Amino acid sequence: MTQVTVNGTARPLAGAPVHLSALDFLRGLGLTGAKEGCAEGECGACSVLVARPDGDGTAWTALNACLVPAAALDGQEVVTAEGLGRSDHLHPVQRELAERGGSQCGYCTPGFVCSMAAEYYRAGRHANGRADHEHGPNGFDLHALSGNLCRCTGYRPIRDAAWALGDPDADDPLAVRRTRPAPAPAATRVVDGVGELVRPQTLGEALDRLAEHPDATVLAGATDLGVEVNLRGARPAYLVVVDRLPELRELSTDPIEIGAALTLSEVERGLGGAVPLLDRVWPQFASRLIRNAATIGGNLGTASPIGDLPPALLALEATLVLSGRAGDREVPLAEYFTGYRQTELRPGELIRSVRVPRPLAALTAFHKIAKRRYDDISGVAVAFALDVAGGVESGVAGGVVTRARIGLGGVAATPLRAFATEAALEGRPWTQATVDEAARVLAGEGTPMDDHRASAAYRSAMLGEALRKLFAEATA
Image (cartoon, rainbow, N blue to C red; front, side):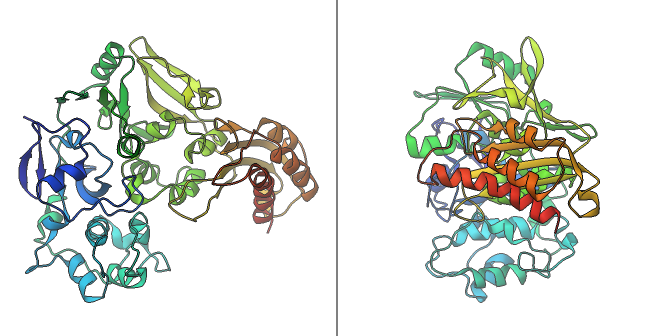
């Protein structure tokens, strides 16, 4: 029997349409705290808590309920704002928001409550070790709220409420729940008159389903598909859910290999700073709500020309392990993108993992040019990975560029390597003259276009300026 536990009560999913969102399912139960604001994962009004694995325990993870299909939560545990507290017994997060004026119209408040509660219950929150404009004295990371928007209250009282939170009480039921394992994924099959959703239990089973249905849609975090369903009326006929397949959730740092079904938040925690270039990407990749659901395989599988991860992984010379019933094969990421939203993936294959070779470059940077600093789609994204002998190590110019790898996004139908610019740098002195010459080459890479995010001329100019910025910062 398909069911999901909501606020401690088992709720049957039988009869729920395949493409029904978790948000609409919850609101159908009368839990109307979660709202639909944008229907694309940008406003956070629909935020809820979901129990997710955290080692041998559980992490209460905030997700956008408007994006994930309800059927994909079969066997899982969900907590909404109503499940955190009552009007006569407020949860600490709700109480602080109320007392510090953190809510006016209240439309967005339940979403803020759930995102804030996820950070409130985060293990090791006090280990941040710093208090600055993004971290409170209690270790609260304001990036936990980066996916929640408020149009009327103003963020200062919301921040004050977040920074006033103490630790959960020892007998807090949700805090106690963290000590037990998260629910295992349930074998799921949901069928209606429009489509079918299945959750295989093993990679082999998933590959069998994909071989039987070559046009199947692979579903992981649903941060891309959910938008297509909500805003463009997409109704894939056959969905194969792979986000909890054990074979796609392995991670190692030596050698570096990242399972395709790991969420970006899990990858960030699991790598623990082992890949500095990726650490520059995470804060600029959408919001924490999105990174809690979006997977590294999903980001590459959609093959968007403006994705944030591909430029960084191209600069890191990553390769992809692609799995099919015939076995695994390895494809360099630079050869993976074959056209607009087209890839080397064959029918019946899926991305198993991403491999990053060592040694890593000494000088790395990621520059994202967008209209907002956070939670926005890039106009241009540039990732650099350089080795400079005798220069960067001492903090001065004058060394020789021994190796240059540059990944670009937003300037062509696919993400791409800036091969011409790499050649213009390698073997040359790391000087302003070399950088200016290479910057002119970089400005001519790709085939940028005019659209509502940026003009082609602006995109080209930003490419060159990104290299000049890298040099200025590295030699300051």
